[in-house]
Image (cartoon, rainbow, N blue to C red; front, side):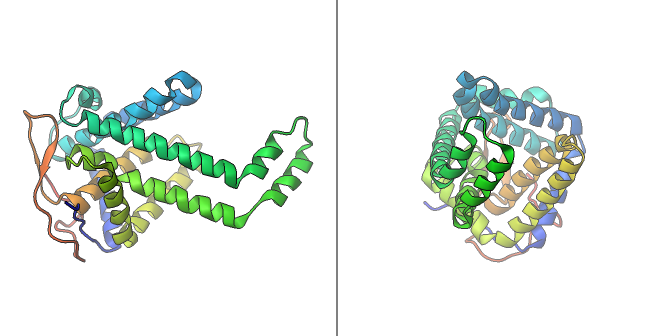
Length: 273
């Protein structure tokens, strides 16, 4: 069964971001520490190569915990930092989240192999011992290929879009087919290109400001980006969420209408549980 997608106009991208900010500001430090923990786990793979695979496989669980905390805050509940770890002890979605990690790791490896082929000349320049910096810059300029860069950016964009909604589709939507999940995530970006472009431009603009200010404000910007992306997921895939407190931490989705152009149901472009 195909995963149905709702379509929104460009202005919804800004409303999703504002809705994320509204949720974040209720308990900002909790969401900041949650993001910092996710980022720290991601950095483990670079610091300790032996932990790279466990870190990659754990990330979908942590993201699901973050989204679950955002949902509870959206419903008016207080959340705690420990909520991000609850998903590890919940049954019913763990294998699907594990598959998300496997597929994402496999796709990243393929992307890395393609990039190593596309930029083999540039890599060769860096591998030369005792190379003069000025000569290295000249060789890098000569090895630059616009088609290679363009192809890499296209592939990287497809990679990001294919997994952007994968975790919530598996955890909240209960979908088990990774190919269907990745296709739905890609189609969500395709059909909502205007709204997601506005959302992306806002996020990119804020990150540019963070770069100027030594990246410290990312502790605020990134949690808001995560929450607003979850708001976008709710709007596009699950207009009516019903949370079961005594269950496995997942939610049921009602039958969506066929994809069509429409305004958001609420004034802020999100759908309250």
